[in-house]
Image (cartoon, rainbow, N blue to C red; front, side, top):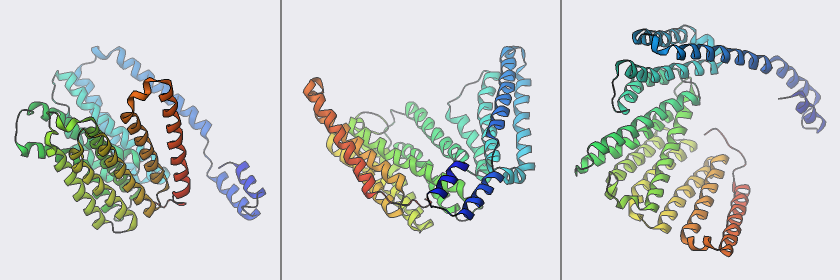
Length: 382
């Protein structure tokens, strides 16, 4: 906050002179030398790039075992620094611990690629991802403090799950067993369970921000799965041959999401918890229903808009202003896409383009008006 802004607030009568002086003193005490930090950052970046260039130029001349040993030593050294200095670093700057943990997990992930390069081995990508997740997810869960580490946990789980689905569906595509498709459907929804873990731990941990972010990211993944299922239905994907044929996989995926949402409502019974659980359960229900509207443009669009209308309703109850506005924008965008799907021939003429442009402006105007008129005035912590 700048001194000019504080002075403007005082001149406008928003704060008195005593408050102005306290704010100015606080800002002066907690000011950050951004220019100095930028200089240090540029210098560190130059040194790092220099080391990378030197190593890259002599990469083939360095024995593989030496490279792996240095890689492991670097991970071990950073882990040692984290365990020895975690509390002190957290007191100085929680973001320092977060950045250090993120670098360690990134080094751990690249180690498996390095290992394969040295020993000229290959395997399905989900296998090293699963090993990395098993080794580093517990560390992230024990030390994570913000959204980068939460994103690493949930993102790693999502990446591993879909790599496994891609590999296994190609390997056993011809097998007709319903149990196999049910298993793959469950795998696709497994990362959603992390929302339940986040909701359960956020009130029981000294790091509530981390668990809150993990719950939010897993919830976003559930909504993304449901939106993708609606898009598949609009394109007629469920009628094609594949692991999604007949909706068997979506039944398992959606059912697991519904159960997770209901469990989250029980684990976090406050308004925010109930609405988050309701969104996840609603997303699971949409996933289950998506195959029933396969290759039907209007019903598939209505199912998508029902999903986001439910999210908007939950956001109103929980006073999530940003989520409500996002839901209104998603519904407006889907209306525009639906109009193009239903009147594609109009786009080939000038008059049709004019009508389409007017329609887009009209939908955008209505969306903005709805967002301003009905959006919650406050947004408490989700």
